[in-house]
Length: 565
Image (cartoon, rainbow, N blue to C red; front, side, top):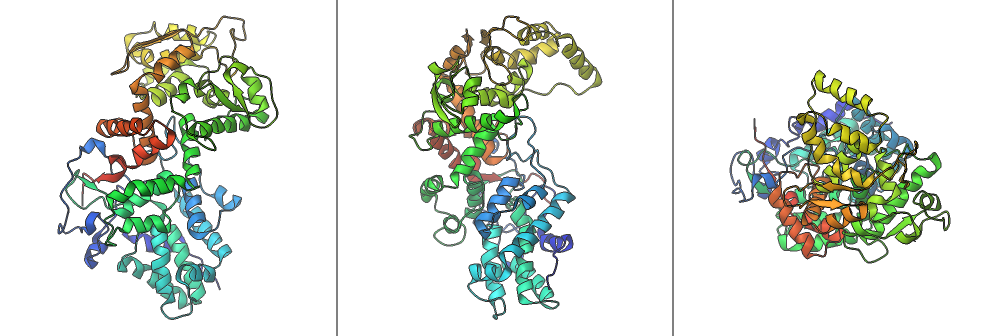
C-alpha cells in the first residue's frame, strides 16, 4: 500500500516556513538551543554576533530564491542519484526570465498551485522509481523495519536535502509523519513518505537562510551551511555534496567554516565536472541563448546558432584549451561554427559539425558580439531592442522604464508607426528629434547599436537592407562615469575601445554577481570594485571572474530583514 503525500502533508512539513520575506522562522530551533543562524545565534538575542563593518549596499537584500527548474532537477539527480524523466521535468512550470534578467533572478520568480501539484507528483514519481528501501539503505545503511533505522534515515537524508543538519524539532516533524504512515501502512511506505515530504519542503525548494537574527538591516557573515548552499547553486547549479557540507560544518562542526579553506574549496568545485553546468548557464543567460527561440532564423539552423555561440564561449572560458583573457569577448578572432552558421557569417562551410573558423575566413567578424548566434538570439535589428540589451548587459548602464501612463504608451506606438519604414538609423535619428523626455534615455542606450546596423536578424552581414538602402556602422558611444567617449567607424573600433576600458571588466563582475546571487548588484559598488580587483589580479579569465565573485562579500555576507515580527 502506498500513501499518497498530498499538499496537506506538504503544508504539515512546511509549518515552520515564514512566507513574507522568504525568511526562516527560527523560533522552533531557538527552543532547542540549536539555532540555524550565524554562530548558532537564536531569536532571543543571546549569543547574537556583532554586525560586521561591511557597507549594507555591498550585500544583497534578504529574499529567499526558489530553486530554478534546472537547479531542482540537478539537485534531485545529484542527491538521490535519479534524473528526472522528460514527463516529470515538463510538469514543472518553466522559469521564464523577463528582459535581461538571469535565470537565477529572485525578483522575477513566482509561485502558484501548479508548482505545488507538480512538486508533489514528481516527488512521488521519483521516490517510487528509486524505491524507499534503496533510499534507506543508501543514506542509513539499514532496513526500514529495523528499530531506529528511520530516525537515522531522517537525519542523513535531511542533511542532504535541507542542506544542513536537521534540528531535533525538524527531525521530529518527519518522524511524526512516518509514525502516522506506519499506523496505516508499512515502514517502507513511511520511508517513502519521508523522502516525498522532504522533496516538497521549503527547506529543499527554497534557499532559506536565517534573516531574522540580529539587528534589522545589519550585516553578518553567513554561516557555513548558508555559504555552502550559495556556492553550490552558483557553481554547480545544484545542492552541496557531502564534502561541501563537511566544509560548511567547520573545524568544530557547528557551522563556523574555516575562512582560510574557502579558496581551496572553490578550486575543488571549479575542477568538478558539475561546474560545466553553471558555466554554460551563465553564458546562456548572459547572451540570451538559454531562452531565445532564434525565431528569425531558419528552423534547422536555430539550435546550431545556440550551440555554436555557447561552444565558442566555452572555448574562451578554457574548456579543452587554456582559458583566454575575457577581452576576447570583444576582440577575439576565432569562432566555433557549424557549416550553416559559418555560411550566415559569410564563410565557406568546412563541414556539418562544429569547426574552428578564423575571422579572415568570415565577413566582418570581431569578438563574440558579432557571432551570428549572439545577434540572432536578440531577434531584432531595432536600435531600441539591441541598444537596451547591450547597454544593460555590456555597459551596466541601467535604463529606467518609460512612464506607464496612457499618454506615453500612445506616444511610443505613434513613434513606432512613423518609423516603421525607416532604416534602424533613420528611426533612431527620428527619435533623437523628439522631446527631451524621450531624447534623454534614447541617447543613452541607442548609440552602441549603431555599430551593428549592418548585421541582420540572423547575424548575417550586409551593406544594404532589403530595399537597397545603405546601412552604416559608425557612431559615437558617449562617456559614462569613468568610461571615456568612444568614437567608432565600425564594430571593430567600438570593441577595441571597450576592451581597453576598465569599466567593461567592472561590468562583467557586476553581471556575474547578479547571476551568482539572483539580486541586482547595481548599487553594490564596494563589492563590485573589490571583485574587479581580484578578477584583474587573477588574470581576467572566466575562472578568475567566478573566483572573484565566489569569495566576495556578495556571497559571504548577509543582512537581516528590515522588518521583524
